[in-house]
Image (cartoon, rainbow, N blue to C red):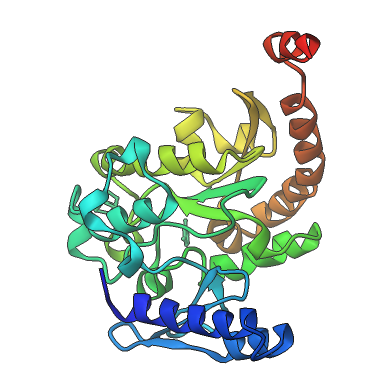
Length: 283
Ligand code: URA
Ligand code: SF4
């Protein structure tokens, strides 16, 4: 497999080799690496590879660099079934997915973004106009509000993983249909399994139904419920709270509870289970 992304990786390796060989020092190496950019003419995106070896993308129309992985580095010949994929493979599969009719109207699919080991995962509904253009979740008005809510509790957007129950934009932002939710489900199932967050926050009805089918958001919002080894907290969708001013303070209030929920979930996920205790005794 050779393409402009593998060539870019080779150039980065060459710079690292010059440092390893003593030709340049580490500060010079890092400065050189930070200046290197790869332009993707097709989408208008810019890419860079950090000194620590992590890929970042700046989508056309955005001014932020976001952790991402080039699909050009995923080998399509070695894609396993979805339940065995890693995160880049899921992104690859989602971008090429034609399982439901939503693929017909998409500009770009939106697999989701964030650290692979995030303690908190937000699950929204589906991409809107801006998300569909950039291939990133929550970058429009609702995304701005979500970022404000995160800042309000001392979090940064980069700290959390953000995904959606459908990965392609429904026409005119209509609600996702049951067959579309079903078709898209196992991508999100696998993302949750891999990221293994302590706390999942569902935003809006459709992601709440994933865990609490038929529940009423006005009744259960802000209440954490234990699901397996984590807490799931249903919240109003930020876009809904922007349109319904009475929900805004409720959403802000629910966000204030998040740090406490993370603590709680950390505590019970560290409970020693009897089988590992026995093992410890053996040593
Ligand atoms: N609303 C969502 O539910 N998801 C997005 O990604 C953006 C807006
Ligand atoms: Fe595939 Fe999900 Fe997009 Fe439908 S919404 S085409 S299932 S990725």
